[in-house]
Amino acid sequence: MAFSSIKPLIKPEVSKISLVPTNLNTKNWIVGLGEGCFYIETSKSKTHKTGIRVVLNFNIVQNIRDSYLLASFVQVFGCSFVSSVKKYGIVKFTVKFFFRYNWKNDTFFWRI
Image (cartoon, rainbow, N blue to C red; front, side, top):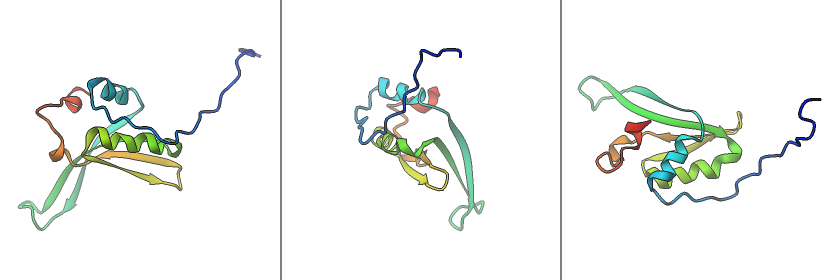
């Protein structure tokens, strides 16, 4: 058998983690975490002239065991939330409120 000397390890559950420092290195680490995507969400609206509300979203989906990790991202960005879909065993970090994001002082989303 190939690689018979290598023994697999079980990924430990992350109980609590904090990524409170919002320096550039922390956010660069987030980019390397996994796959994320931008998408446009539309919905009917009585308060918009066009009758349609358009929202830019960004999200990262991970296994539910990483929920504490993704929840800590809310501290880093300050304009996001985390939701889980237990049926599929996933947790989703979503940035939806880009108007709350500090675009002048932080260029993170411009660079990804």
